[in-house]
Image 1 (cartoon, rainbow, N blue to C red):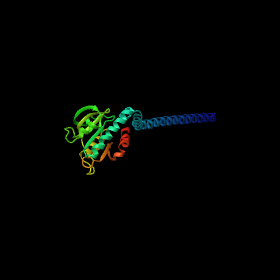
Image 2: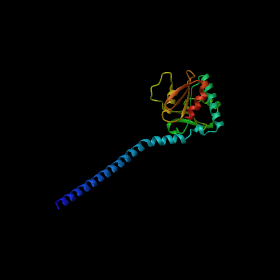
Image 3: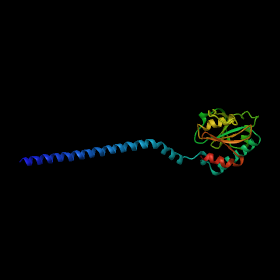
Image 4: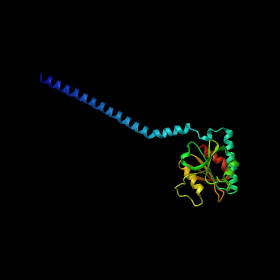
Length: 216
């Protein structure tokens, strides 16, 4: 009889141990699922903005890409003729080609022109005798939209060879996705500013380089 009692006790203990073991395994599994879910959630939170930005960059085209082929060619050619004349004659100029970001709130003053782009009009605007020669021209939707508009200059330290136009071009390039062309009044040097950088460009490379900047 004692033996039977001991067997019953042993069986009960074994059953309890098995049940406890199963409970521990279940608890560990639940904890593992929770931890995995939390880690996945954190990774999604961290990676989602970058993923959305990548998708957006693939889906969105620059304003330049949205233009027809003939319009693209005309825009580039008119700008090339403009900078060639201004550079040769050392006429200072700053021309901003607006992209996705609207720059209305990033500029001050200015006169609305809203005229079809042409090298002759741009050259006349930057003529030293013109009342509109100070400040920048803004090209929007393939039109000369603003003339004599001004930007805040960059706070970055720049080489002394750069003047106020270059500093203004850098300033606007730091806060929007526009492409800005600068012609130095002192040297006739042509530069392009975008994304907080400014790079001197040779005239013979101007068209090729400008297309790259506009497509970016």
